[in-house]
Length: 127
Image (cartoon, rainbow, N blue to C red; front, side, top):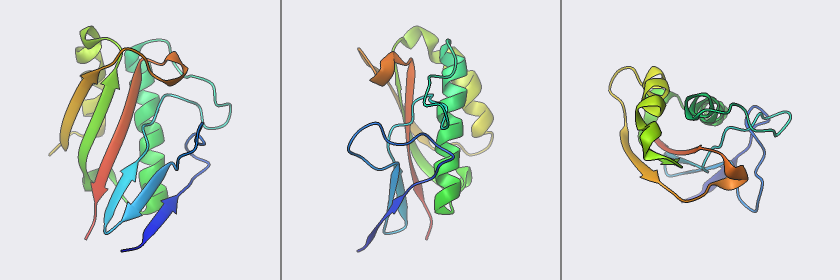
């Protein structure tokens, strides 16, 4: 099995020793996407909802670069700072997956990179 690194300027550059995404065997695995503006690399938004919007926008850019769409997403993992924001995050998240959403886990964590409120990673599949 071969592995292909995915990189796009439409999503934030990696801020550590990792790739934005990898494609292997029909699967696309994204790194966790935080709400950074891809040009300025500054955090976008001060609320969990605003940050979810940007994190998902970044994930969509990576999907597109690799030739995938949101319809190909089979699993998402959402890391959040405050489970009390679950409803606000869901309001934004569901606008991206209006029909047949993927499996998903939501995990409250103690801290995220750059002290953001949300980080989202995605697994997509195409045969």
